[in-house]
Image (cartoon, rainbow, N blue to C red):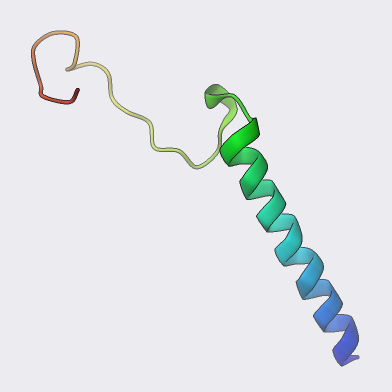
Length: 51
């Protein structure tokens, strides 16, 4: 029983790590998950100091 729980945890952590790396390095920016969206309304009108 204990071995079964350990196996499930190892597979779950491995899946989460691989999903994170794929999201971080392989996906184009428009498909990325969990990235904060930058509001671009103020940057075009005046110098907001964001660049």
